[in-house]
Amino acid sequence: MNTILIQNGLLVDTEWVRHADILVEGSKIAHIAAKISEDEVPEGTEIVHADGLCILPGLIDAHTHYHLVSRGTVTADSFAEGSRCAAHGGVTTVVDFADDDKKGHLSLCSENRIKEMGEGMAIDFSLHQGIYGYRDTISQELKELKEKGVRVVKMFTTYRNVGYLVEKREELKAIFAECKKLDIMVCVHCEDDSLIEKINKEYKGPYTPMAHADLRPSEAEARGIRTVGEIAGELDMSLYVVHLSSAAGLETVRDLRAKGVHIIVETTPHYLFLDRSKLEGDDGPLYVMTPPLRTATDNKALQEAVLNGEIQVVATDHCSFTREQKLASNDCRTIFPGIPGTEEMLPLLYTFAVNSGRIGVQQIVNLMSTGPAKAFGLYPQKGSIRVGSDADLVLFDTDAAWTLTSETTHSGSGYTPYEGFEVIGKAKMTYLRGHLIMGDDIYLGIEGHGQFVKQGVPGKGKTIMH
Image (cartoon, rainbow, N blue to C red):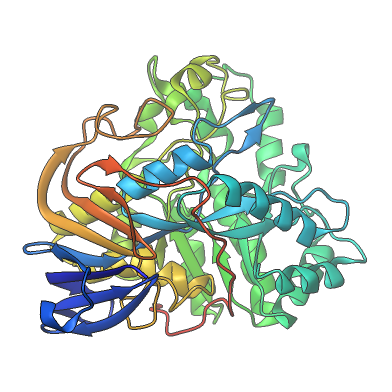
């Protein structure tokens, strides 16, 4: 059994910060103390000096789409490439996505996805299971899904055209009710399909990348949130809103919360730091994703919500295509939607924290590790620096100043949407269950080493809510 002693680091958990040593035995954290002498550990223990570095629990990117097959092609970052991006960004676990084949076997859909990911992932993973329609078997399907260790489902209030939308309110509510009975978390992509269809029907073109932001406005997001939020309120259950993109959506969340609805909100770095001006020019297609980029005013509203605790999770919705794939069309209806982001998440959020002066590294850990671990039932195995937790650790240099470019990042897409962003803070070493998977910018991940992490009760543990 391998043993590692990490000495003299500044340990950062959401509940405490302290200088301490960590002893890792096998895949677990075995001991934490102010000082662990080398005489106290087994012969052959690897000694790692972490002087001047923060030690964070491995980050969890709670929203990814690695190896997504879409529109006759596949994304640039498959399981191996996605794992590499993650390791360089201090991410040791992702929550990816399984499609609903609508054949009445949700557990088999997840089982197939778990098998695929298990063969290629070099980091750990869990799942959201998509549900695209109500059927009489849904209760039994959800019970079988829960037995597989998947206790999070994802639904849509849009995409009628591709068959993702559960159209009837009573059917949507019935699915929500079954999930509540089984302690299954419901995550929702919120955009009102009727409004989007109306706007598209009336629109006369042209269908440039910039038009994407007009065809799917923030009001559609707000309406979608209100629809599912009211159902969650009627059933007295929690709701998870994915990739909040707008001030209008945020105001709807506030209104629902004021009425007693428990909503966990996720946003992404691109909705915090990029605006719709990126959709202009020749590179506009590179920045097309759904929901679309909003205005600088929306950026500021979401940034403030992060600072004041109204947003509980920052994830990336990593769904990358190559420059060639993205630039093959200038028509927003046919541009492959999605961008990379897993690797850039930590430096972007840490830089934002430093520049704001209002939150520190503990809050960053909560947004990108402990918060998602609790929301998805992975805590304290993940998202924690505690004895018995998985030895997923990031040695993080808070003083490293560098620039995000296509040359300094590792996505198979060949670009970063944050090109030229000057950031502070960089992962120097990333450990997954006691194995070094990235050190000094050298990737050491092994395909197939990643493991599926079963989900416990979602939302378990205290969650910071406002």
